[in-house]
Length: 66
Image 1 (cartoon, helix red, strand yellow):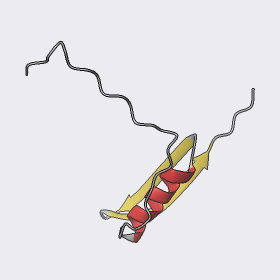
Image 2 (image 1 turned 45 degrees about the vertical axis):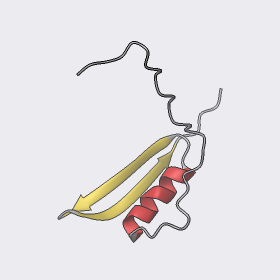
Image 3 (image 1 turned 90 degrees about the horizontal axis):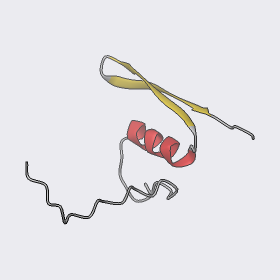
Image 4 (image 1 turned 180 degrees about the vertical axis):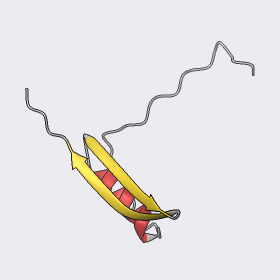
């Protein structure tokens, strides 16, 4: 693979921008995951899958104080 020296590196995604899912016709499990990603700032989103199907979504949000 050839890399050009003149190539400008891509900027990282703006992680402070809210995830927009309005108007998308997502299945309920994907809708729940997208909503969780849009609401959490720091923490863990854990998915539990049984037989290839999403059964549970757990959100653990972290709040740290200095």
